Image (tube, rainbow, N blue to C red; front, side):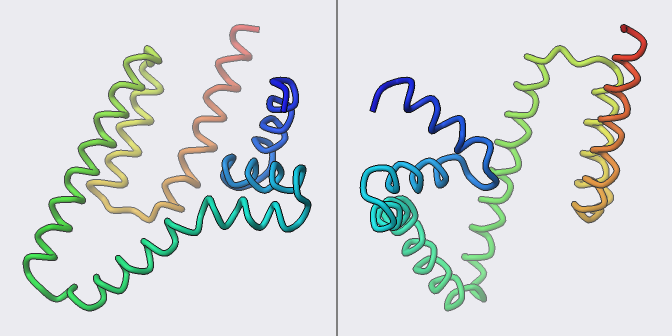
Length: 142
């Protein structure tokens, strides 16, 4: 596969709904071995994680009531939240946000973390707000 073919295939995979890697694997398998190649590529990509997920879910179903398991999951959740916040701060620093962007970020954080609003409500408000802000900003500049 040439670099151009790779770029074209990846471009198509990126425009399709779903994960880019899944789309890319299916199209690459199909290109070289047809339907069986696509199935093999998908099985190779998601087979092992699926088995691991089933094992972990089975273990959790069996041991979920143990206090140590609950404590471990609470710790893992706190660590994941810290990683997400750290990544968000790094991204914000690189974007050099303006006041409106910072207000949206603070509002989304407050709605999710403090008010525990449903994610669909937060998204339903935040996305139109952000799009409207960009449209107004571009009208002022243009």
